[in-house]
Length: 245
Image (tube, rainbow, N blue to C red; front, top):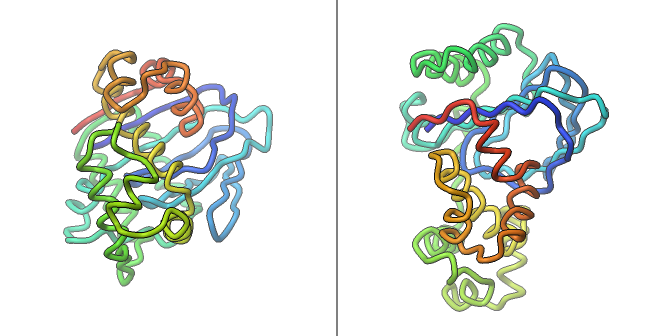
């Protein structure tokens, strides 16, 4: 799956979250500070910023005139196809200053061709991939992820997760913070709004999407979605440039 979004004017910073895909962003004007768990970097117009899958981060707008924010999402499946690998090999640096790669990034927003996106990914992986790193989640967290992905949204809670894994709530919170940089509640919320985003990208009505992912209060859904993506669900559907599976 490939998804592209362009936001002309940026009003809000993004709260701490992560993506279930490889995300690559760039801006045309201004500066944005990106805070990872282990480092802070500044994104300026001459560079790309890379968010590896499940890499927790937040962004802060440093310049009020920051505008034209572009982002591409490549699914894990798409990345594995290009990498010809059974496991994802992460990008080894967050900021990439590469004029040709930056040009290729922006060209994808007009070409929208699968071959062009594969070429872009191949060049990115060839030059900036950490071919030796293979990060595997501890078995406990693998079980948690499976539980979250396999159960109804209404069944997702700190209590249900703790009971399923057989640990205390406090211990569950500690291992989530250590491995994901998020609390269980924030992780579940992040998961739900990402699932909602996929449905919205396919044109599903916002009210139906909200209920489908367990939000029965529309204002709560809008607030949760905006806390991760800095735009409302309606704005997201308007700003989506293309979405391919």
